[in-house]
Length: 268
Image (cartoon, rainbow, N blue to C red; front, side, top):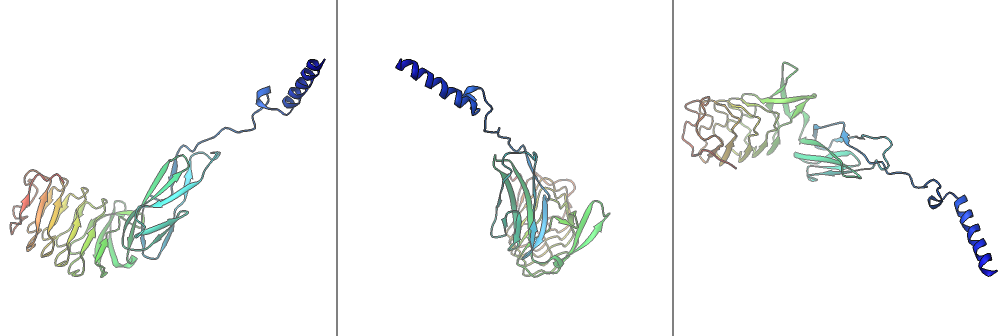
C-alpha cells in the first residue's frame, strides 16, 4: 500500500513538472541559442587629427540579432591618442592604431595620425582624383608625422623644398601613401636624425637631403627606382643602407656625390 502511494505521488510530481514545460519532458527550452557576431567594421580606416581634437569612430557588427554586440576599444599608443567608447582624443604628434574588438574576438582597426596643427601643412591638388602633394611645412615641431590623407584623398608626394630650412626638425615619419620625395625636400634640416622611407616611395629628387649633417643612417628600400643628383650632398655623418644589391640604372650617376658609405643588399 505504501509503495502504491509513493508511486502515485511520483507520477503526480512528474506530471506537474512536465506541465511547466521542462525540456526533460519534451517541453521548449527556456535558453535561447547564442548568435555570434561574424565581423565588425569601422566608419574610418585612416584619419589625421590635430592635437587636442577628438574623432568619434563607430563600429558596425555583421548581425543585428547577435546575442552580444558589445565592443571593446584600445589604442596601440596611448601617449599619442586615447580611445574611450570609440571617441579618440589626440594627445601628441605621432601615429597609433585604434582597434575595436567584439565579445568573440572579431576585430577592426583604424590608423590615426596626430599632427600639431591642421594649418602647418600646405598642399597641391594632383588631379584631384589621385591625391595631394604636400607643398610646404610651416610648423616648428621637432617631430613631424606627414599626414596620410587630406580632404579624403591620400597624400601621395612631398614637393620640392617642402621642409627647406626646418632647422628644429629632428624626426619625421612618412606614410606609405607617399610615392615620391621631391628635390631639396629636406634641404638644410640640420637637426634631422631620424627618417624612415616607406617601401611605397619610388623616387627621391636631387638634393633631397642636402646638408642634413646630423643624419647618421638612412635605408633606401628596393622600391626606389630613381634618385636624383647629390641627394645626400654634405650629409657628412651619413651611412646609406640600400636594399638593392647594386646601383639601379635609374639612379643618377652622382646620386651619392660625396661618397657617403653605402651598404648594398641590406636586409634590415
